[in-house]
Length: 206
Length: 206
DNA sequence: AGCTCTGTCTACCAATTGGTAGAGAGACGT
DNA sequence: ACGTCTCTCTACCAATTGGTAGACAGAGCT
Image (cartoon, rainbow over all chains, first blue to last red; front, side, top):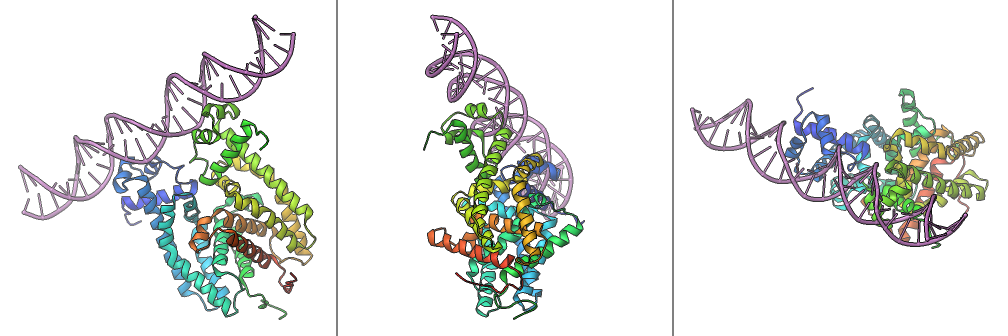
């Protein structure tokens, strides 16, 4: 492990704690404790709790942008395959670190100012996705619909399933390696079916 | 309008506040204030905050069971239509009162004991849904897959989109009457496509 | 009348919250 | 050796947290 700075370690712990239990439920003392430092050191690096939340949101946005950008760049031309690639890329870090998407969800209950700040950071990603969906719909390679809402629905599906372990436990799913692979495959099939063009029947008929 | 008891009013306010901002972020004082009573009156009806959370969860579960049960009972035979009916039934209260599903989501970050208690209350609903999906898959009227995971995915989609206004705002969606209808229609089309049998040619009959 | 039960209140309490003030230790250039 | 800058610390603080103890008013029963 290359020596991470105190600031980085604080952001890291705060991301996990905020994402898992919510911003209001986590105290600066607890964050400091998991970092191995005093609360005042946290307040040295981040002037207030709000400031820390801002920093964490910025860090999350940056991580998501990097991951998704790379996936999109390396993806094939077919829109369904491309969406597959993005989901695949997001799925791994999201499952290994549920707090990541959990924090994105948390934004809805933060103040509108902070929601706005995150929105600005990821809006290029969102705009590109919506534009892409619209283009492919026009080209007949995706099911027709409102690209904005469909983007939000796809997001809701992925984020929802990744951040609600209790929903999966409620149906008796287990989080072992086999379960994870099955979940990922079902999620991909679900999204493919939801987004595929009506007349483009995948395998047979036509 | 008929005089609701203090207990009911406390449950009501607590549901809205807990669902909107999270259990930890809402104090007993704040709940009492919105009810128009002192904190100690809240503690008279519910021995502790945990106790109140339990009560709210029980109330939420009961409301969901009633709504969904009625929708299922009145729904037609075709599985896609049936799922439509359930979504329709859940969508209205969920949008009018985001806290309802918001609280269900909140369960994931509560203790496992409380998650378990809610799980027990709604497990009949879940079991029935999973069994139904499995049967219809066997009958070839729904896309093949793991009924458990697909139930969870459909739940994640509906709950996710209903509880994350920020995601919709990020794509420029507006929550007026027109937007709501469009959202509901897109959600239904999305789920229909995601769940429809592969070879079932879309029969858009109105 | 008196007595009990129910529901709401005032008065506290210890613990925790986010945050301020400032001391002290080390590194570094002069 | 000196001052300065960076970083972490101890010592506090006012406000808020969930919760306890018990007073008080009304309704209903005897």
